Image (cartoon, rainbow, N blue to C red; front, side, top):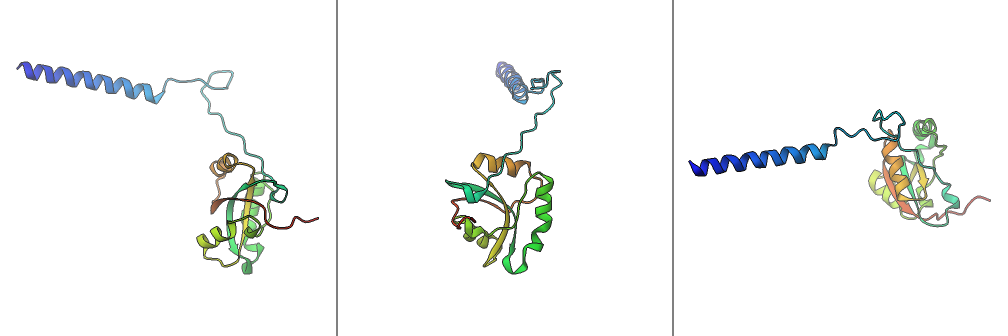
Length: 153
């Protein structure tokens, strides 16, 4: 009988500890926010600023949102260009060969020997990740590299 009492007491203590630990982890009563009224509203992160890859001095990251075979032409990519414009990003199709390593990666993912893509370039991996999180459209890949094409004069 004594052993049963100890087992029951240990089980109750363990259950109480688990319950307290679970409630501490949920943070369900936390209403701290940046809102002045303390309503507990979620803060939406800001959209990151895109860069012009042709002017990048160092490595940059591109979130490729659509890829087509160059032979299909830019018209196939227009719906993605329009979706990005609605999100506040002005884009045009560009050759992934203009970013070191991107053409090989996108070609390998899509099977296109000569890919043409729509991508948004960012100065940091964090900004690319934030865009990828906020953008509701598709992401084909995120690539890192340097600009390899001759900038237009």
